[in-house]
Amino acid sequence: MGPIEDFNEYEKLRESLPPAERELNLRVTELIQLIEYFGRKGIAIGRDVTDTMKAAASLPIEERITRIREMNQGLMKRLSDAGQDSPFRM
Image (cartoon, rainbow, N blue to C red; front, side, top):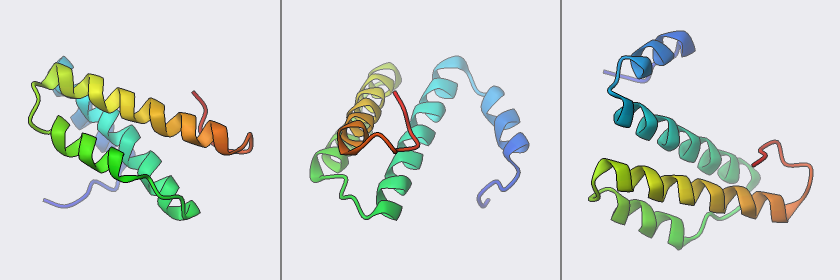
């Protein structure tokens, strides 16, 4: 299996997941998009993000969702602190 190129197909697959897995998928997708954006802009995400992600991988799904949501908010805050012209908003 490879990446899904059709966004509608991706959304259908996400909607078919159980609620907790769907929420996790959404939060991880947001995290990946933020990390990709940081990479394109040449902004280091920091070791704290990678360490937190590694630690979150072994948590129960609900706790993992919470940790990833917190990481996303932290990254959004970094963007907010960096300037008002950032395309992502909290």
